[in-house]
Amino acid sequence: MNRPWTARLRRTLLWLAPIALALVLGAAVAPAPAHALTQAQVTLDQETGNQPTRFTFEAIADNDATVSVISLTFPAHFDLKASQTGVVTLQGLNRVTVKYATSVSGQTVRVAFDPGLTPATDVRITVNNVLTPMQGGNFHLGVTYEANGAVKSAGELPFSFATPTNGQQLAAWLGKQPAVKAWDSVNFFNLFLQPELGVIAFTTVWAGWLISLALVILAFPLAIVGGLLLAFMKMAKIAPIRWIASAYINVIRGTPLFLQIAIVFTGLPIAGLHVQWFVAGVGVLAFNSSAYLAEIFRAGIQSINRGQFEAASSLGMTYPQSMAFVIIPQTVKRVLPTMTSEFILLFKDTALLSAVGVFELMLYSNNLVARSGNITPFMVAAVYYLIITVPLINIVGRLEAKLAQSEGGQTAAPPSKRGRTWQPASAGPIEALEASSVEHESR
Image (cartoon, rainbow, N blue to C red; front, side, top):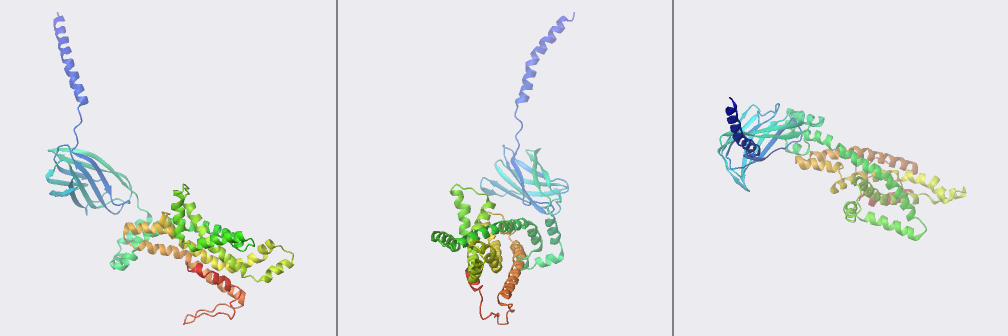
């Protein structure tokens, strides 16, 4: 009895099945509704937290929709109480004026446009003075907009910043102190000796100072070995050996160190020789200093009385033995002050490597100055240089006084009011050594 009804039901289902299948497939392949805001992105002007930060949101109104409202939702613990919002709109390369109104509600900044943004409009929203939390990390900025009366989401845009270092936290604390604010109110002090930036500079250029020290500590022993070799070559009895040493010394001393650095760091890569920057820096400093040390050692050796050689020979010593056990020890004693001065000069010359991108003390300081527009990092760099040079200068003075006492039996008197210093009637055997270093000291 039910067969006619069952047959009709089966025929109805067979008739509806293609329609249902078409609807399902149509829904599956139908394109998702296009967003009215495209190419959305957010950027920050600060790299660390716990400081006022400018957020810049940029997007393009597109797809034939009129955007009337854009809302930016910041994460929790972002302080928007002192924030200020500005809007710039462009069409192509031309700036267009659009009326807008801004409001802040909780963690959301709302920008309403009247009239709305037409398609192909590039909108840039800047939210200034957003106080970010201390703890850095990865965050997201929520973006919603109203287009043609419908509220839609443009997704969550990622951004990040780092936790400030101890130095940066101390600088932020100093910037809030009344005494520091009064100090910074003086233009000269604020430009050259800003306490907050000074703290940051001290902790930042520390790495560059260590690199400068490493460069000179590795280069100077190599220069000593090279200088001794060149000194012996220049005093050799074989003429070609003397010529080679003289040519090297004259070329190195007759050209600026900066030119030599440029040849090593620019010329060698052009020639197909690629040397790691630290190794190249150590090498060019060592080659340069060896030429000056060669003249220092040569003058020191020649300042030793000839009778020392004769006495050593009378004891049966060969020439190498006389040099190793009699002449060189006395020479080192005499040239030690001048060698210390050469070390000081070489340490200061590491600053020239900043011109070719070596991240030593000067380049770290220069980067901070370029970013802050303040000279304080250069003052901090000067302090780091003086930490090394001032003690060494005092050591040189003490060594020279002891050397003068051992050579002439007198100590140098302090300078008089007219700037004259006591000198013995005879300058002694170190006169040639001091004269040989005049050009070196003034290079």
